[in-house]
Image (cartoon, rainbow, N blue to C red):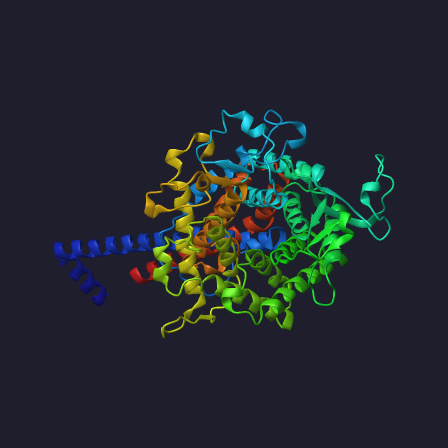
Length: 588
């Protein structure tokens, strides 16, 4: 009683200042407690976001395209570039629109030429108003370049789906199939294919073979060329047809695609992988008088595209891979002992290599022979000048003569090579300069070569009609204020445009670290892209819940996502309660 009495007397004698101080201390502790709870509450959305990210990755693994999963690995740094993504996008869109405009429609041409492209035009032409230009039967039409244009449109559509692009692809493929794809006469049975009767009798055909045929009717003008099937024609026909098949399945029966593949295999020497490059029935069949070292790369790329279309368990898949591998090994053997200046700038072989290597076993000698061949071709491409200053003196033109198309094709090949080139590959410089990474040398050539090609379109756009926007001239000379020397310098051929936009689409992927260049991205970029994919998928599901693919995603979100988020919320709430209890005990 005496102790309690003393405490009460002390409390009663406490001055007002001490009461205020105790009140302030209590308020500060209460405020700190509230702040702690607010900080703990931030864990809820953070952990929920992690849950959604994990959910999306699981969804991709189960249902999505495996190649779309973010690659993990060391990031490759790019130097500061004078090429921007916006600049590339404008060029690609303009070039694609040009190819779309020059594909002949039923209102612009006679029925048998609907689907062909205006093969050659000139910067000063006005194709929009001059319909006679469309209806003229142009000479020297090239079937391989027709197929190449379809190939570039397929890449453009995959980059950004567009109904007009798809419609033009279908029209161009329709012409290809009607005018050029046909059976192969068996010259061991029939002596002369001209003996064929009108009803098709009189000539025997080799079973299960189809080829892409060129003759005077396709070439146009006064050509009297007899039917000829080229190795490269079959390869590029496959590339074009498979490109559309990937977008609109069922456009071409798989059996017909396989028959084109069979024709390529029929022309190959099984022992050394070499090819007969042309088949001429009027000369007895296989024609060995002509050799193109670009055709094997085109054929290999077509077969690889077909192999990727086949089911993994299909017996045909390995067959196409084997023939394509032999084709590239033949080129490797042929070029192994050549000097760099003797090696052809074979961009088709590089494109084929980029798609073949992932299908091969890295522990085999075939893999490394194919790889070393590609390294030699790339090294040759970037050895055309001794110093980087010489390339700058030619404004980035890889052939130093102002031509745009050879630079574009080299860009395609070099950019494809960057997807598989090892980091330790070196480029040996002349004049006693130290060796540098081959990748560094390639990136320099790619950057300045791309700038050269981009400028060829950009600086000619102001002086051309609306219908010629997106055109790429045969030659570009910025040092001469772009004053052309002749009418020939204003020529715009369909392949000048298709090769240039194909190269720029690859460069755009590189700068955006997408597709085969995903591993070039930094960790920060990977996280940002992952977050964008998650948010984009959620928005898509909310906007279009009725679509089958979105229903699957929605089911995953409900079955797995909601329980995971619920667990995160409970965990966050528990953390807050524990934190609140801890703070309360301390204040007491």
